[in-house]
Image (cartoon, rainbow, N blue to C red; front, side, top):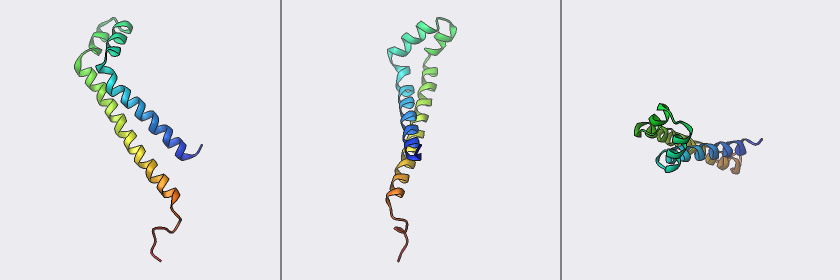
Length: 90
């Protein structure tokens, strides 16, 4: 597979997971899923604000990685479109 396609897929994966982890803990979906799937002490712990904050922090970290991958992809695409000696003085 082409490295640009692989990098674009990596960017997409990090961005989607990051956005989900950043937003989901603060929605009703999180509460309903946790109460339904974990009706134990662990489920009550997952509803605490600090746990939601940690999950959101992981989402922000994923978005930061996605941003770095986007910069890398942008640079790679601009390098590919440039002639081999475009930056050297004649």
